[in-house]
Length: 117
Image (tube, rainbow, N blue to C red; front, top):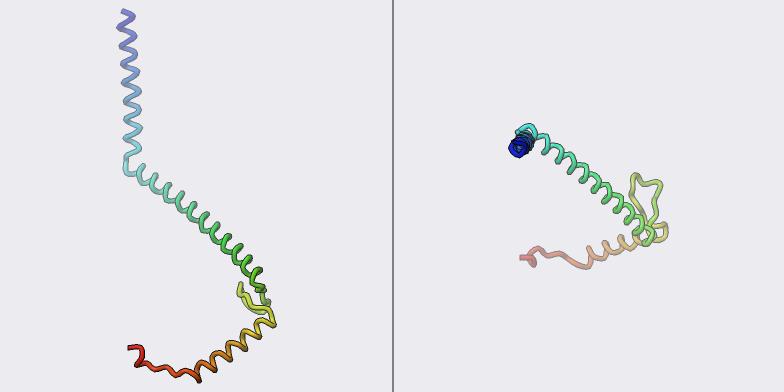
C-alpha cells in the first residue's frame, strides 16, 4: 500500500513539474513575449554599438593627438573647431612652395586632352 502511494505521489509530482515547464515554454513562445525579447536584444545591441563607437572616437582622438605631436602640428587659436595648422615658418615655406609649384606646372606643361584617348 505504501509502495503504491509513493509511486502515485511521485507520478503526480512529475506531472505537475512537466506541466509547469511546458506552460512556461509556451508563454515564452507567444508573439508578445517574442517581440519583447527581440526589443530587449535590439536595445542591448544598440548600447554595445554606442559604446564601441565612443571607444573608436576616443582612440581616434588620442591617435590624432599623437600624430600632431610627432609632426609638430599645433592648434591655431584663430581657426575654428579642431583644425590644425603647421607652425609659422614651416607654414610659410609650404605656402610659398605651393605657389611656386603651381606656377611652374601650368606654364611648363601643356595638357593635351587627345593624349588620354
